[in-house]
Amino acid sequence: MNLLITGGAGFIGSHVVRLFVESYPHYHVFNLDKLTYAGNLQNLADVEGRENYTFLKGDITDAAYLESIFSEHRFGAVLHLAAESHVDRSIAGPMAFVQTNVIGTVNLLEACRRAWAGDFEGKLFYHVSTDEVYGSLGEEGLFTESTAYDPRSPYSASKAASDHFVRAWFHTYGLPVKLSNCSNNYGPNHFPEKLIPLAIHNIKEGRPVPVYGKGENVRDWLYVKDHARAIDAIFHRGRVGETYNVGGVNEWRNIDLIELLCDVMDERLGREQGASRKLITFVKDRAGHDARYAIDSSKLMSELGWAPSVTFEQGLRKTVDWYLENEQWLEEVTSGHYRDYYREQYEHR
Ligand code: NAD
Ligand code: TYD
Image (cartoon, rainbow, N blue to C red; front, side):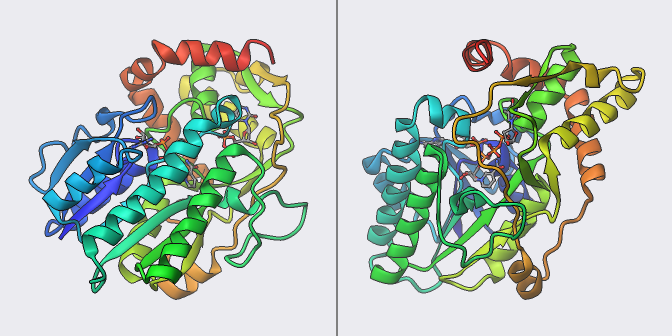
């Protein structure tokens, strides 16, 4: 089967591409990616030469391009991860999120509908989404698959819209779809604009670690390879037309997480315990900052037998070690445009 994975040069996509290329030699994996600032083929350097892997540079907002690759490669399934993914960037410039996340997703749905021309037997469109579509929780409760959508940032609104379109194509046209909504991921290859890799980078450099507001916002963190394993399980064994929530059962207040990370970094860098905590700097809060996300993954766990394979402490140590061992990766992605982004985002906070 020819499998189209979109966004495979990004953080989660690269782990998904590697897992599918290595686990399913009878699939040919086509990785379609625009290579935005977040896409990096270095993430897949070890996969590049594999016989069952092909990279396609392209943009999902370009419907004609999609039509041409669908007719050339006759994909049997699509695993859709390509997106603009960073909340702060969506606040600074929402239109790219509308274009890629909404229009791009609808373009892909249409490309599948046309290419598969009503013969949906054995076909699949799998849409990877986020728990942020559910909005913000109070101190109690968890997001389940039936929680009403209540997106509050341009990013989450664009992902919510894309989820609605995917379900509409299932109900209206009978397109076989699956969806999953996952909590915050962390791990190797995470672009250092997101909290954990940004903090690792700054601690390493001895620079201030910016914590928004009072650091009391709560996120549910999942190791990226466990997300990739969940996607594999849902892709192969999940029920068509269904949504699965994916989460780490691992809630942390930002400030507690950053303090733990500082301590792990001190240990790994041979610094005196407590040294890196001095870098923590409280900065102006994010506009519309969601208070708490927490996921109920019991459907995925009971139906498909999935569970996280590492604890947070293990995953965080693996992540820190990866960043310390891959200095060149970090240097390359934090040169050039990254410096302008960082200045614009943090100078006035
Ligand atoms: P990422 O920003 O690291 O990667 C996105 C990839 O998509 C990049 O390689 C980029 O080049 C590509 N891309 C962007 N616009 C494109 C376009 N128009 N055409 C083709 N390719 C394009 O994102 P990520 O963190 O790996 O997230 C992947 C998916 O998982 C997204 O759909 C995101 O909403 C979802 N998700 C992410 C998280 C998280 O914590 N990172 C959690 C839950 C769900
Ligand atoms: P982020 O990694 O951007 O993920 P998301 O907004 O999708 O949850 O942010 C995680 C949490 O960390 C969120 O509550 C915002 C906060 N945060 C900071 O405190 N400082 C930072 O520099 C960043 C990027 C995020």
